[in-house]
Image (tube, rainbow, N blue to C red; front, side):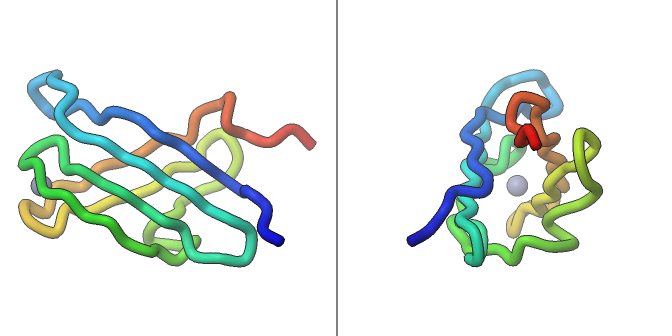
Length: 89
Ligand SMILES: [Zn+2]
């Protein structure tokens, strides 16, 4: 049995303000995260399994963010964890 730990699905905006990228993160307990990323700057698409730790996951709580580096143009994209996505304890 697997529990959902984190999920997000959003459009990403590039430096010109166009929403041309996408990020999908699915993380089940005890597994690597499944990440679908479309770079908002160059359109490069990458599906990967990512370890749930630095350098991908940074910080904690409401300041937590995910860092993606495009495999083509090397653009770094910071995905802020949304408040509504935080688990209430
Ligand atoms: Zn790129």
